[in-house]
Structure formats: C-alpha cells, structure tokens
Image (cartoon, rainbow, N blue to C red; front, side):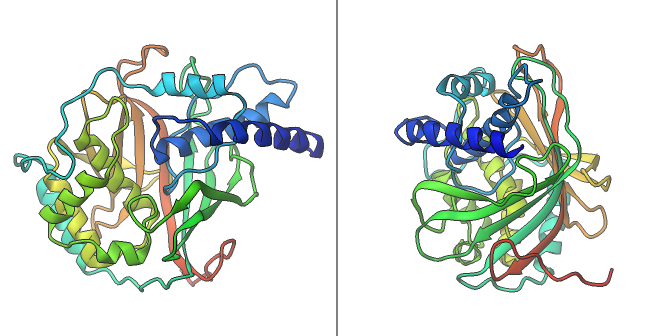
Length: 352
C-alpha cells in the first residue's frame, strides 16, 4: 500500500469500526478474526486499480479474542456470514455437560502417546506482563467469495499474546511478512470491544495452569465455556477450541497431556496416517469431521516425538462454489514458540 492508499484505508476503517462497534453479530471471536483478515485484504484491493472482486473468507488462525474489525462495508460483512454458514445443526449436549466417551477408534492409541510425550516436555512458566511468542508459516485462501479456492503464497506470521492477569482490551499483537501477507510488516493490535479476563477467550499460561488435569473434568469445563458457531455441533466447537489452544499457546505439560486425553473422549475423532504441514514436514494427523460443519481441521504431530507441527483446514461443502469434497483452503506450520518481555520482540536465535 502506498501512502495515499494507507490514508484512504485508514478512513474506511475508522468509519466502519464505529458502525461495527454498535452491531450485534452472532459470531464467535475466532470467526471475527478470520473476517478481519479478509476485510483488511479487501481494503488493500479496493484501493488498487486492478481490484475486481473481494476475497473469500480466510481461515481462523489467530488466538482469541475479537479483533476490532476494520470493515469495508456492512454488506461485505454480511456476505462473509452467508458464505460460511453451515447447512443445518447437529444435536449438542447442554451447557456444562459432557458427551459419552467416544468408542475406540484409530486415534485413541496415538492420542495416548501424544499425551505421554507432552508430560515429558519442559515448559518454563510465563510471568504476568510477559508475552507468548508464536512464529508460524502459512498459506491461506486468497480466492473470491463466490469463486474457487486459491491458496496464496507461503508467508510468515508472528503473534505476541499478552499474559496480563488483569482484564485487557488489547490481548496481543500480530505481524505478517511475505507474499500474500495481510498488511505486511506492520504490527497489528489484537483487540476486543470490551475488557477480556484470562480464560477461554484469552488463554494465558496462568489460566491454563489453573485448569483441571482430570480429562473428564477438563472436557466438562470446555463444553460449558465454548460457544457454538452456526452449523457446528458442540463436539465440533470444542474440538476447534482445543485446536486453537494447541497452536497459539505455551502451556504446562500437565494441561497439555490432559487436553489430548480429553480429545479422546470427543466422539468422531479419527487418525490420518500421513499429513503434511506448511513447512513440508510429514506427521500423523488427528481430525474430526462433523456432518453439520462446512469445514474440517487436521492437527499434525511428529511421528517420532509426537510434538505438534501444524494444521491443515478443508472446506467440506460450499454450494456457492460447488464444493462437495474436501478442498484445502489453509495450511500452516508452527516454527517457534518462546517467552518474550514485550510485543515486537523476537526470541534470541540459538545454534541449530
């Protein structure tokens, strides 16, 4: 973006942010994040001569909670909602309840091994006032709303998540660099319209350490606190929430182990023998497909160390695009996690 385009984009953001601040949308924080990325990209394209169409919604890949949306128009935001609404609803347990344990499946043994490996992992406690730094590489959908999926170029994303124990409006920062990055090189604040306390929408290390380590108790808590997006079942929503925690946090070994054991108890979780992350690393995939959901995520783990590597996201159905089979619309790979003292700071490089 040149200086003139930045000025006009800033004007568009300020006008629409005021509109969005008073809007009551039935959207979860994670979905707001995905829309924010698409809308910011739309601002870029609207102010270039070659802009013809708006981009398709991009995949959820940022830590919660809500970013203040710099929208182009309410109509565009409405198109986003329509595009990603699933067809129909699956039954879901009441808030606070757990579903019956899943029947034995091919993922159970692998999840047990991943849980055991997590218990052996060292994790330095993160102090209040510090930031959890996560660097990843990703390719995301840059296609149009009603057109085919087109994966953009591989780019780097850095996210700094605040570990403050107090309610905060600004929960972190993000920076994308490389081809098809959103506002490349700029630090973008991750903000909420209201102060957010540590919890499922702002998962600090201290909050993660406070969670029950009994898998059944942990799953009950997750079912009670996870919001359900339209078209998803409660089981699918909880599976997605756990995926968000795995990719965006540093957590105590006991908590990580309990999470993997909790996943075993979610019905429909299966294993994929071989899956590849955005860095080209092969691993074992853990996934769950829901009849009511239009998307499916695959978590990828190293076949030997069982460390989390990254994820793949698929559209499973989209009538507007004619999608009836799995279509890859996003892929990432976590390259580095660290604890830093301020946002914008990168961890020191180490040999190897």
